[in-house]
Amino acid sequence: MSEGHTDVTTDPVVTCVEDCGIRDVQDRLGDKWTVHVVVELAAGPRRFRELQRLVDGVSQRMLTFTLRRLERDGLVAREVFPTTPPQVEYSLTETGHSMTHLIKQLIDWSLDHRSAIARSREAFDARHPA
Image (tube, rainbow, N blue to C red; front, side, top):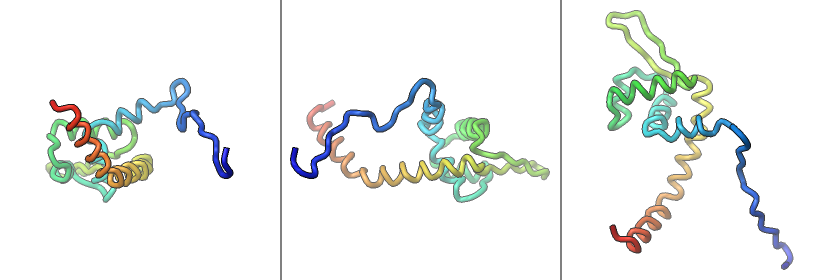
């Protein structure tokens, strides 16, 4: 081997032995609306209708379902204010805020690789016409 050459390893960079819990996290981050909701809540507490306006395309039913799942997982807190009619506000918990760092990395990665992915898709589509 030449000077400065390093051995190539085939060891996985990431491993998950037994039940490491990745499936739960993947299910949450992989659904259609979670990342959008968390990004909007990272800016501060929001009321339901405000979130619905900010998360483009989400239905009332899906936003309710997503917020309930996030609340169940301890990522979102729901606060009801004793007004008439009652007002409800959603905010990220400490655990939810800690997830924003991962989402930021994912956003940065997607921005960095958007052009390369678009080129790859175009090349693939040219080789495999539908």
